[in-house]
Image (cartoon, rainbow over the protein chains, first blue to last red):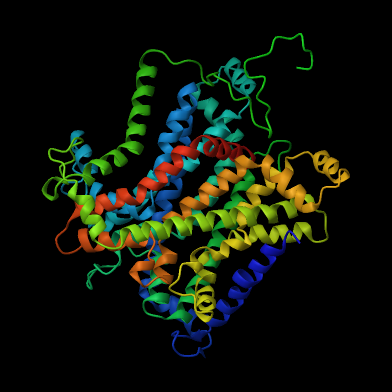
Length: 288
Length: 307
């Protein structure tokens, strides 16, 4: 009764499509013609297509930059806000505003801010004597640029960390203080264990979204203006999947790509859960 | 607190609905800061705040600069060129795009809030066989990347002839969304069971329980879901790229991408027009946020405690 919407939606828009997608991944399907079975050749192509390797590599580099940085930065900012006291509301709003900015607008704006010659970022870096890189054209700096755009929108995690930090019982700090623990020790022995569940949650959600990043990369580096000779240094996995499915209409191959992504996400999440269980402290018991 | 003689504390009227900590709490976990520490702290706070807010200020400024000054990084433009906005609205059916985006995001947010709440209520109130297994399935779908279902779902909409309409952009939300179901269920579980039982005794129907008790008590959670989805839908580029071909049907991000491509990334490099268009696409969300931010951020914070 009450579950009916979800059950219908699950069958029509999740379970059904999953079966179809699995079927398509073993076919050659160009959308105009009926799918023809090709066995596992799409999956073989996943390993032979150099752009897959490139796209996966770029996505991993981006995720490896964004997930740790995003987590640490939002935790640090959360701790910063914790001390603000009554004005925390104002700063919380300020840090969340970028999240409301549409991804396309943020990406377009950062193309300018990160401009190698005249961008604001390099301008500011110049004040402290750093010659900033060509963020948007140097192949090595494209992934850091994308990570930077995403870092700008970690407001949600900041708010969540702030709330978790507020929830750490004060007595624990008092006890640690009496035992003569310094600030660093207090952070690692009290704060971090007490918010480990939140850290875990943020890391997992950041990872899953980072592996599927599309909007920023596509806005900044792809589209009609893209030069035919453009390198693949900013090609992330979802952009390539989108190209294969809806620009080249290799829908069978794109389906195989989607399943590979699913498997990668499952494996990475499983590893994170494993590692997480060792470190995460749950209130009311050492483990679940 | 039951003793009426006890002087009421300032925050005594605040009844924590969830396991929320009392809102007023100004202890400093690591002691007050003095001297150099305080200066460093204020400096860090200022730099961080600027890093998050200044790009938006910069955007507003860049949007009103003439072409040759748009890269000058001055806060206050030397010259104002309001014509930029006229250029934006002449660059395509921008008003139509805004209307489309408003329609689509509202439809997406309203439908997903109601349907997810309905399902979440089903999962929290009723006991039935396989409940935890089914709920596990809901959670499992959160891990499924959209890419897996993207192509078959496109084929479905194509089959019923609705590609190049806006319906595929929100209609799936009629069936609830796993993350929101999870989030709302947490809130429904926080409502005391006796409340529902009392209503049942008074002859309230199940629909009444949902509509008249569960929903009103979960207003903060509904606000979170609504704002989250409104923002996600307003910002989404992938679905409009897949489903919309006719410019009249574009949503704002899809149109904005076209403007950025056409004006800034090719041809004459009119970045000022691209920035003005970005500002136009951003302002509606800022307005929404201005109204919703308080309850939204508070709700988000309670969510973090439970998560």
